[in-house]
Image 1 (tube, rainbow, N blue to C red):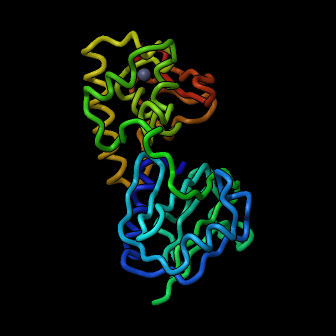
Image 2: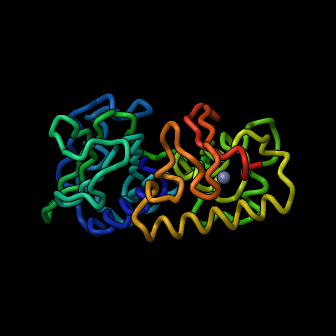
Length: 259
Ligand SMILES: [Zn+2]
């Protein structure tokens, strides 16, 4: 968290600042600025610029200005506050409270209001001209053909391939487990060995999960969520769930119906 659904809500919230001109750039945490960007450079590049559009690719939120593109990444606990309020109250792994010490970056506008990134664990970041081309197809609009291409080649486990932002942009740990659990696919299977039917099923499931969980309120609202704890059983068939590390992440799956 935040995964694609949360960042899409951040993007929608950020729409409120389109048309506003940046008066002040707040960069109290130089470490949060990435790819060599310094607080002084960020101020010089953005002050006086107007926000023209908001875009998102996977978990990367972009604000196009009449100058540079500003890229915002939210890591595990990043939150966006627009005009002092956040579109998401609590993140699954993040603290619910806000602390001024977690304020990493912000813009204040000439006409009033602000856009602030708050990040307790500091795993997110801010950059100018982010490398969009390194990201795979966006998970909210990926086609079956694009998904098949993203899974082809190499020996990566299926879940690792879904988490690889260069292959599919936007899927994080919770969504990956939910999608594979619903699709009945073993997360540890080599991604490149899926049949055409399985790719089609995975694509349908991915679309359905994103639509449904988006409507419910986020990545943590999946049907597998209550079972993401040691000793839990599969909500579908009652089989004790397997807890493993796949693709470097804690993974819950059902040994009975995920194959
Ligand atoms: Zn099961």
